[in-house]
Amino acid sequence: MHEVTKKAIERDIILAQEFFGEAAVSWPPSGSWIMIKGYRLPSFYNRKETAILIVLPPHYGLIDVSLEEFYMDKGLKVNTKNGWKNIPHYYTGDNLNQFSASGWGWYCIHPKNWQKTDSILTFLKLIDLMLQQPYKWNT
Image 1 (cartoon, helix red, strand yellow):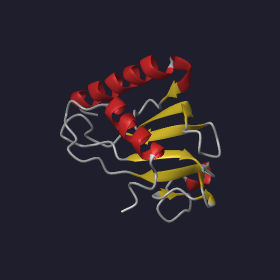
Image 2 (image 1 turned 60 degrees about the vertical axis):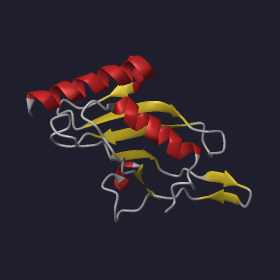
Image 3 (image 1 turned 135 degrees about the vertical axis):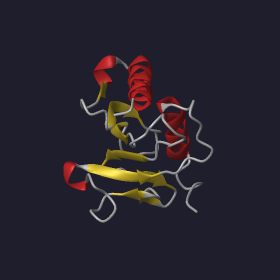
């Protein structure tokens, strides 16, 4: 692993621990992902919280490579005026989801204008926006 990538991952782990607490954040020795337990969901979801797994891409921090892949617990739905609905861009099947068998649903997200100085907190703000207005991003 490149030293810049290692430092970016270490920075993001520290930021996540400061924001969510050390007990809520875990990661493997390889630094290939960060998991946050107890991530609060907006009130119109069928659960109060979920775990979030954020995949850290190779060369993260080295070049302007954005965080894109994140996973949430399977089975999440949104309460709408027409009842419980599936979340757009949230895939629980095996076709697009490498972690489906482990109980994760994949949420497709593609940040634009990612900068080298952006961090996991930048990505989490984007996740929050998408979770608050899941149908706004359905294009």
